[in-house]
Amino acid sequence: MRVISKQSGFTLIEVMIVIAIMGLMIAAIAPDLFRNVEKAEKTRVASDIRQIESALKFYRLDNYRYPTQSQGLEVLVSAPSGSTAAKWNGPYLEQLPKDPWQKPYRYANPGTHGKNVEVFTLGLDNVSGGQGSDRDWGNWNIND
Image 1 (cartoon, rainbow, N blue to C red):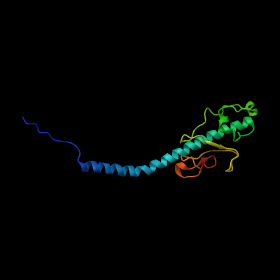
Image 2 (cartoon, helix red, strand yellow):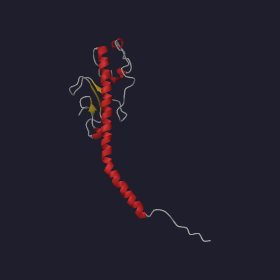
Image 3 (spheres, helix red, strand yellow):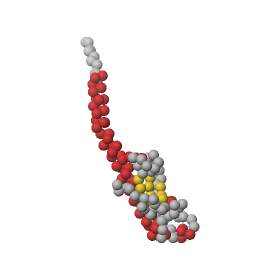
Image 4 (cartoon, rainbow, N blue to C red):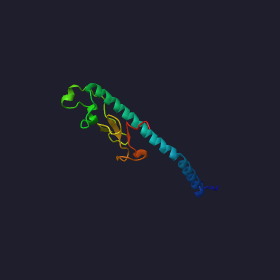
């Protein structure tokens, strides 16, 4: 008895057609995907900044003022040294959140964008200014 073996598999043309179709699908989906990533980053930053602002307001209620620039946001999680420690009724946050790029949020007292104090991130590039993921987000523009 003679056994006839038949090779099975894909031809080069079939493989190239599948790759071309996958490339077209990726080209159609990628822009929406990247817009959603930037939207998620902005949503996360806005949520974090609102949480920090809320903690700052509670700190202000207890201490009659916002933390100084030198105290920074650290006073929201651990008691400051000196005379303000007696009025400290925290911790106001369990831990300080980090921005979506794993950098700590920044704090400015006094603010320069029309706010008493500012909580902000410089974005992915960690440099002032920029577009997309490199944009600066703070409590003065998170609703834009």
